[in-house]
Image (tube, rainbow, N blue to C red; front, side):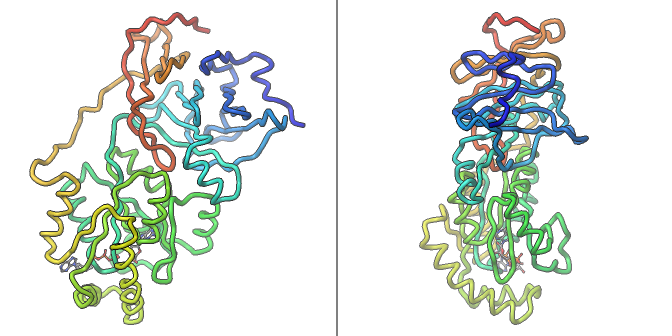
Length: 392
Ligand SMILES: Nc1ncnc2c1ncn2[C@@H]1O[C@H](COP(=O)(O)OP(=O)(O)OP(=O)(O)O)[C@@H](O)[C@H]1O
Ligand SMILES: Nc1nc2c(ncn2[C@@H]2O[C@H](COP(=O)(O)O)[C@@H](O)[C@H]2O)c(=O)[nH]1
């Protein structure tokens, strides 16, 4: 039998009937969802990252869980609010783009990962203000022109799209740069990272291992951009089965002869590799057309025409949306705050001595996404509702 979290029996933390929390001086909060109490506090190391300990009230002991996703850093205290399947963490003294985090404890992603990894898990997801369009998954046989089309899109709309940089165990080509085209990695390291749940998807493609890390997708979301993934059909199938909502596009060649010509003309593969890629192309095209994974199929015959079709289905033909600087600014609490959950809203009370506009409301109904990746659609507003809360 373990010792129950001290915070609760000793009353160091106020836990109200509606799940709101006030933080104690040790920077720890204890939040109960179902049978488990999640004690969240500063890690006992020099990183200042957040540590999670889990107490199973039914078993009466502390339990271990794999913690997935990038952990929040630079932590100077927080408030925690329980939702049905996750805990909202509001940091104190936050940086402008790093104020709200979610610890997912029973979401679809968490349940999926429990099955995949064969262990209990929780997952971090950072909250980002505003809404970003769904990621775009682009698949198609090697040499069909996926990379070419993606480069055109990123060149024309650099503020809108960000590329998810995959990991691969294949050797870099002459012009490829580590961290830009791929994260080139050792097979044993990548296999270890797959075991640790760092990948959203991975597959063996043409004899090498390729995979999309959760971090690769998160980095694009953090930049407020729409994520583009260039992955094979197996990877697209895994993403389709995951909780990441995306648009799936399959690119077809006009003919196998033209595909072979493009692969040869590119001059990046040996004859043996070209043959292997062409053999795989046949079944990839069949799956692309008939598996039901893909929302759209495009034929890349004339490059410009295919690019126009791609833009059209992404809603980018004709009028081009200019880069937006219109992110609504809101001053989040810089000092002690308390939080209160009322239906699908969280009311954040700031210290009235410090904050001029001292009530901020977070509307939970507009949240989208979540782990793996970021929780989008955070909507903070200055609140006129008057709720009497006492400050400690
Ligand atoms: N519509 C097109 N007509 C003629 N050549 C094209 C067309 N689209 C792309 N190409 C050329 O075909 C070659 C392969 O294109 P690209 O590298 O973009 O393919 P890919 O699908 O990304 O391949 P891989 O999956 O191997 O990375 C390149 O040399 C590119 O310039
Ligand atoms: N499942 C995944 N497939 C990926 C990923 N990154 C790239 N790819 C696919 O691999 C082939 C070959 O790429 P190449 O750069 O060696 O020519 C191509 O079909 C890509 O779409 C990934 O992260 N996961």
